[in-house]
Image (cartoon, one colour):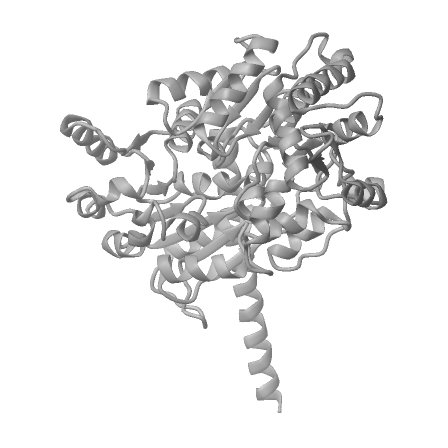
Length: 526
């Protein structure tokens, strides 16, 4: 018995010594990581999720042969909300790994932004992109051989003849795929290079692969796992909620004029996301005429690289700027003090909306995310299958319950107390569109009979009178008024009379009364 007790004591002592050694090793790792982060980026604190991801990367790189029970060693998908510091999760370990880190971005704007960030931190980095000369490529490889820690690229450039094979010779330690939801969002449509990333990763043979995204439903996660990793993968997920973002829906029949009004009234800097390049340019031109050309710019994928750089350099330092842009400026924007994000057109999915709305408040301050919604949007999104990712935006916009929870439910059912949305604040859905309401009231007064032209003129006068105290000048025009009138007639809220009042416009009483009895799907402060 004494022999057994002595043996147990010996085993216990060895175990304690092992635990102490492991604790010291972990402490040394944490100290090294924190020292690297502070030296390069001036930060003195890492969030627990950041530490976990960084430790996984370093451990997998240092112990590439070890396997866990799920055989996912060195493979992880990381979900961190926008503004939580995803980039630190791959930039900090890149300073400590023996080989270079390859970071894949979907957009040139993100590569440019990170290159600027690397230069500021004094970290040697290289960029591979389309259109480079042979001399530029060779210079990049020379810099990698001389110790460049970060390689920035997009999926398409890796399909260039022989590039992936040459990068494989550089002994890439870690491949980080930023905005990994693009695999699912774009891979099957206009960015097929994303579907080739699994093959490219196998060619590179990195010790660690990490896919980063801010938002992803179970279907998107499954697609990322299949395409990039070909099987099981660790999923590291923090809370998806951004408590400092307040969600609002403004229903409007003239969404362009509603966006104009919000851009003037809301705190800046702000972004207006537009569905097309033409809408971004058109919105910027009108706002620039009112606010000044030095305060408003547009940005989209059709600009030349030099034009994009100029807009980025203009936008980042300003606190009075309005940027009208497409999703080309959406992902990875590192401007921390954006106070308002307006969507002229809704995003295609809940994930995309959260990504874009998440451009606001990255410094932790309260920011508004305002979605403009119209009857046309409602009809378009109603065509999507109930329960689909696309249908979520309609549910969000037309909700009578917490908007924040609808977005979180779309990502897997995370529960959160609402820290701000218009439904919870007001206790009801967004009100009927005020621009349409003004026209309906105008017709309903019945002091004068209107035909189409005279109603348009009266509506312009009424809406300009209403908003004169905001703008100090007339901003509504006949095109805006006609847009409102045509939608009201299409919804059978207004109608054109027959004989003996042929051509005169009047209310469709049933439609108008229904709007007065219940909240419509179009409303707000347009």
